[in-house]
Image (cartoon, rainbow, N blue to C red; front, side, top):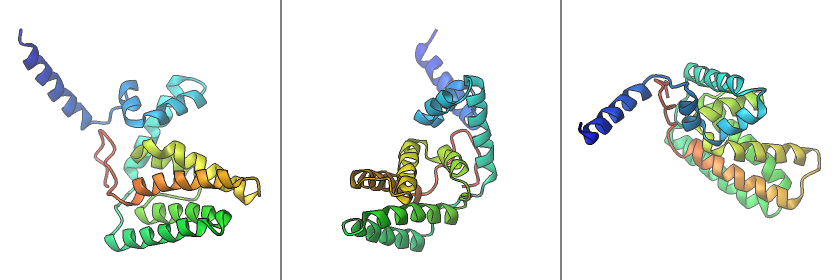
Length: 183
């Protein structure tokens, strides 16, 4: 028995399986990370949470997500720079602009943006690592619209939006693991 050969064979098998949609609990945990944990915590049970995550994968496969053109990336980077600079003099307006800017980027890339929860679910397939940032930033933006966000809250929102901006427009969209996405 050759353990190295078995490891190579096992890895080769995993590589083949990754080309097929992996909806096993381990595959979903691997793809979604902390978003998996949040979804399981919010769902009535693990099976329903995993079903929801699988549905997100299927929905994402149907979307035609595309990378931003270089000109658009440059324009958004410039707008983002201006938004961050505006924070010094008008943090409330800067946070609102940041939220709208993220939505504009998502719309241009092909994500539906009408409903925040659906937008977050769609984005979670490609960018699960920043979803907690996005939810927190958006929540602060909503609180800001109601006049209930402190300056420190607004600063935190900008930090979260910065993480999302780096993930969502400064690189091509990753292909969802185990999917033949049209990205």
